[in-house]
Image (cartoon, rainbow over all chains, first blue to last red; front, side):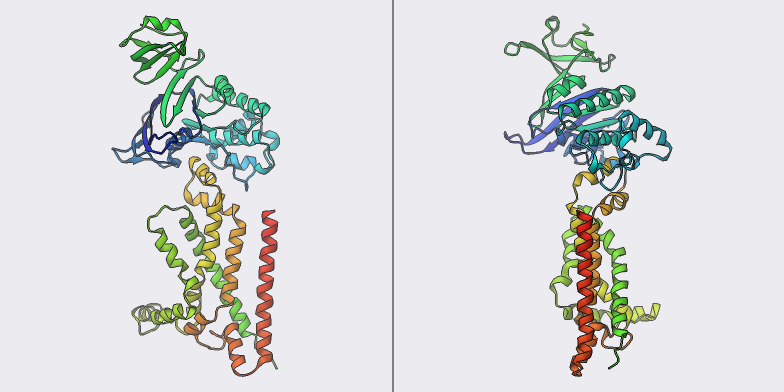
Length: 278
Length: 221
């Protein structure tokens, strides 16, 4: 479980002056972070990675504290168990594909490296330099490299942005396969609804540095053991949807079953169409 | 008239040693300047750049005062390690290190700063230290900047005159480098000998620059 509570001063186009995000990510989930350009999505990833420092707040993952302003804790990026796929892939041009992937691999993980190379379909290119690869191939190398240290949190910054449809679908398949195999908690920034629908089990919309909506999609339960208390519930006539706020989440759903709940009820957020309890 | 080759060899020795030592000092220093967010960084940058704007005679004058056996530092060096930096080859090396420092540091620092920040950040998120990032990722990807730093330092040291004269004087075999020798020969109206030294420096400098531009073109294409 990853608890994020961060505040960072930032000037947004519409006048908001801070990025403030409080959210909990379930272990093993694949959460998509969507929103208009300049809404703070990449900044949030960078805060989690330790590449930027929040002014205040706390970031914890399971028992480990990565950032706590009050306690003066701020782990540098290299001490956080993260994998980060940058939008431009950030592959090292002086190294081959295999060297890029093994660069950070522990010495006893060569079998795992081979498994990753096989899982991402990179065997034919292992001895090539990144400059000779297509955009989709480069993203797969970046993904394999980010996973080589078996991170607790995988951060993907617009991995599909520069890819054509075919490459994008190939990368999605690889991502789904790797996610199913290792269940790495993943936060994916994407502009493409199709990618989000195909991959994510939860979608957080960030606008002007604040969470506007937080939806569970599909029937992929995140953590069926977690119950949350409803703090607000109302029906949005314009969108024909129930808007439900709990202690940790904000859910939008067209499911009429929400009509039987009221503030104070506890719900098990195991998917919108199933698993609700009174 | 027989040519005394000593000034040429001495010049090449001084330039070679200075370049090698500055490579060892300049690379970590440039890396630190490029990657650090240290608040007093501008002060360090200004100090390194001083030789670019100061007349060599000013630098030479203060180094002469500092290295002189009558100064506290000079006396301490003489007593503890039996090293006299005034009018000696060792003094020329130390002075050249200070005077050529910006020629090594600036190109490498600029080369490192021009690399995409995401390469450095990717290495950090992969659990690697800044030092390993510098030597495994950043430096191998700015070879032209490294080469420029090496060659500029070498060429600049070859051409030193005022500083060498202030610190080293004109001791044959010890501090009489080519630029001093040319001045000497002109003073003695030996224009033929001066011409040979000058032509050698001209040819050498041109060959070095040609080599740099040629290699840089191959590296960057």
